[in-house]
Length: 141
Image (cartoon, rainbow, N blue to C red; front, top):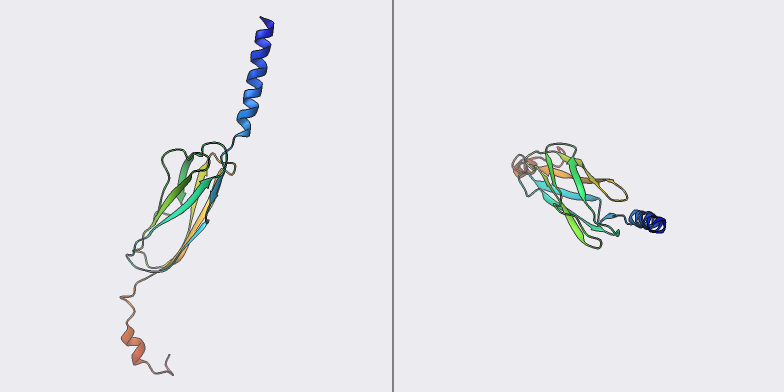
């Protein structure tokens, strides 16, 4: 009986040591998306692609933004080792201004918190008249 308990105890210890070796790793193709210069009201959806390069399932528990103008969407299920996933980000392009936002990804990966960035400029071309520029002389410009 003592031998059986000893064998079970050693088995549990070795199982827990092996379980600790398995870890998920998240690797993004790029940690920044540059929208460039886009028109007001244009499509503001972009995608961050990543791969689980670890040897355990990757579970993204939370994806948040620095403001309400940027809405991130996380993958629902776990990402198995070697598989890829996507985090969709939608920026409200009705706001005419420079874009400088951070999206925070929290997961069970080896690096549990990752900061992603989006940047760009939203312009309203209806406010700038081409005729105004042509009516000015070279000296006035």
